[in-house]
Amino acid sequence: MKKTCFTLLAILLAPIASIAAPEAPIVVCYPGGSVNAKDANAAMGSMLRVVERVGQWQAGSLNSVFTAKADECRKLMDDKNPKFAITSLGIFLEQQDRHHLVPVVQPTINGITTERYRVIVQKGKFNSLEELKGKTLGGTVLDDTGFIGKIVFAGKYQPESFFQLQASNQAIRALRSLDKGEIDAVILNEQQFNGLASLNLTNPIETLFTSEDIPLMGMVADGKNTTAEERTRLGNALAGMCTDAEGKKLCELFGVDSFALVNPAAFEPMVKLWKKGK
View 1: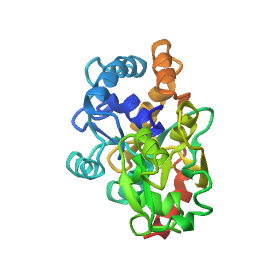
View 2 (view 1 turned 60 degrees about the vertical axis):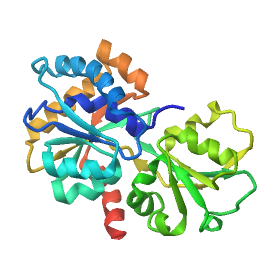
View 3 (view 1 turned 180 degrees about the horizontal axis):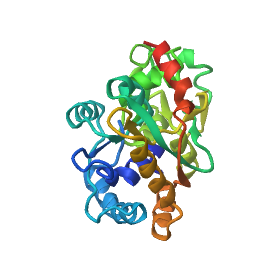
View 4 (view 1 turned 180 degrees about the vertical axis):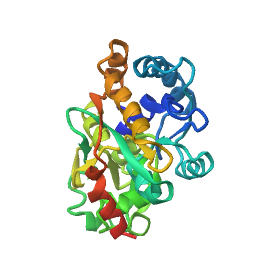
């Protein structure tokens, strides 16, 4: 199954650490991601050359720090105080006020800049999400339960108290457990859901819940620790990557159509929903 959108974005952009601030590497984190540091570093090596060339920065000037754990991400944000970071939407919303975060770049995947989350079950076993109360829910996104509760479920369900959670670092592992009847449901993001057709599951499945459209998160910046020029320069460099001959190959490999500067106001509905759930 394809890596998740956020996993792809994190790997793709990870080397951009010091474009604007060599002393403060970019923090790259995506809770629940299945990519390890070795794989991430390999992808970073390829992207490093492209970003430096497209953005006309000195070769070898870029660096980053990477984690797939939410707690480590929070610590890195505090310890490194980065000018730029690549985070999940949940981490952005959680850390926005603490680190003055503003969205800079957003990816487009399959022509859209949003995704939906879905809860799937074996066909015919449940009729509504309410029937899953107290049942087991698996998935790779369960490391960030605040995001799932406040944004995906729009505050209607609190994952920790409503379900029995079984987090996994691989969507395919959770889906196979669902197929065997070892768990009752799996929550998937857009790319994971789109990859279902490639699996040979024994039992038919169906979607029990579909979220509203949720914007894809890309790179964010500390609005107080960066200038508008720095944010625009880095954003433009990323926007040019997928049209670069070498960069295009990497974008296609990772399933990203393009990157574009984003108006921070586009995330205001998510910010309001997050704060409503506090």
